[in-house]
Image (cartoon, rainbow, N blue to C red):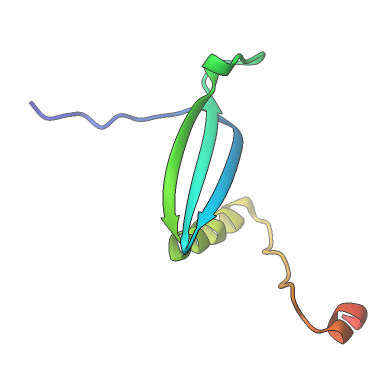
Length: 83
């Protein structure tokens, strides 16, 4: 018997991330029912990403949302003051 792929779905209601060296752990939380939600309604999934995967995911989300990437921080004082 061949296992059929299982689609998982839900509305995203929260996320957190932690860094461990060059790895990122992304916790996504979702629900399948309308509010109000109980703790039992929230499904959490953990995803481990390397830095390259995190950058690719971020770029993809910016692209599909139509938003622009944030400007780069850490520039010199004069650039920050005068643009």
